[in-house]
Length: 177
Image 1 (cartoon, rainbow, N blue to C red):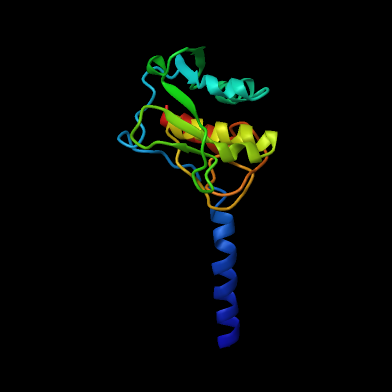
Image 2: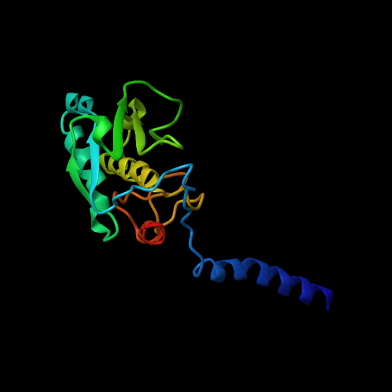
């Protein structure tokens, strides 16, 4: 009898989270102090560091990656500006290594992200996914699940090899804006 009860509890304990995860949202939102909302989400100005132009095709790749968020009805990147001071979202190039980081959003800033030199070690799809991920932070999304899955580019580790906002990212932006 004890073996059956323990087996049932183990089965319920292992299977229940699998079913419960389908109805829960994995996205997380930053607080306004960690990431101020873009004040005019349908008219977002962005700046891409001109130093990306020193590398064949990279400036265009970064610019197009920023604009992948335009597929969502809640946000629209309408103008690329020439100076970072006039931008809501900024993608800077850091010509140095910062450990194992490919990119970073600076908490508390107004849309400041940086792409590090290690980014060049990635495949083209992973490079674009990294930019989309960092811009997602600048729009207010936190990391989601810690394992690689198919619903978000905002996961903390690994790559989905999808370089555009996914279903959970879309749900997070809809909830935020």
